[in-house]
Image 1 (cartoon, rainbow, N blue to C red):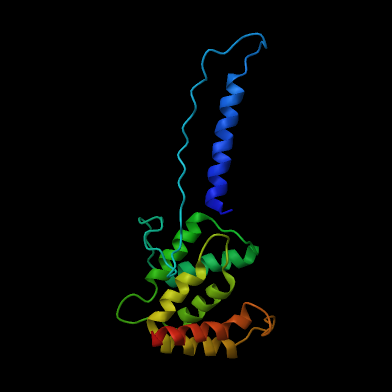
Image 2: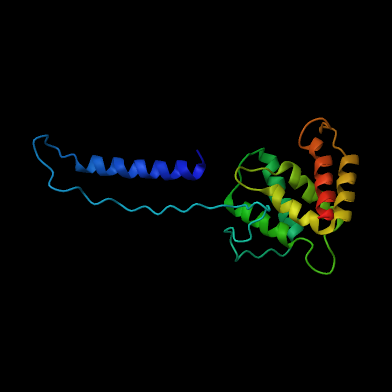
Length: 185
């Protein structure tokens, strides 16, 4: 059962319980002439991704102003890994998504330092219900040559604590193949 169906089922069941509990009177002998009004609950399902990876219509704060996307990404990522969390605030997710979209806009595409940061985000920023990899991959596909060179550099600059046999480090060759295949399409 999908999350969508589960949420709808829970809300429907909750509404039924409220209606049933409201109709019970203090005295068992007293009859109920009519059912009490049922409260209407609005259910909004949010789909953050699409088959292609990035849903531009996904809700996020359009009023965000990010003057330095690299610093924004770095700040959010540092905070996330320092607490070793599997969740992050919606504000940070919105800011990160917007910063990933903004980084490298302009006459010069993403510089090598920012590319390395994006690769670290791809590898280690994995909060629940946020398609980090889809957003990063979409940007990396914009310049496959620079991106595959950055992946090669990241593989060569393996951190001491990273194991080349285990994810996420072991997934870097997969990312490189994905980028190369995307350039053939």
